[in-house]
Length: 73
Image 1 (tube, rainbow, N blue to C red):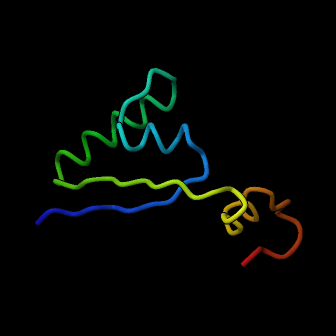
Image 2 (image 1 turned 180 degrees about the vertical axis):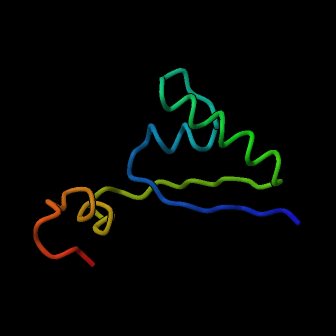
Image 3 (image 1 turned 90 degrees about the vertical axis):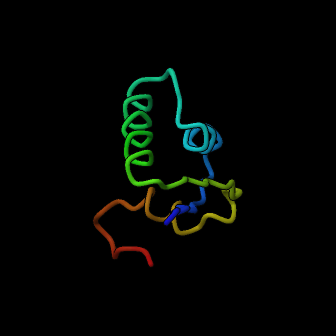
């Protein structure tokens, strides 16, 4: 049974690498190589779509959290 993993990203470089599953930049290339192997073994497809950074409130709050105050969301 085919599986499609859908995801959103506000980083166009990560989005492009994830959709192509190829990059020449280390360590991203190592991660994408493992994703290629996993997706081939499991028969899954990865679909990453772009979301503007201004709409990605949850990710921005988590990445800017100082780990001292209350956890966002």
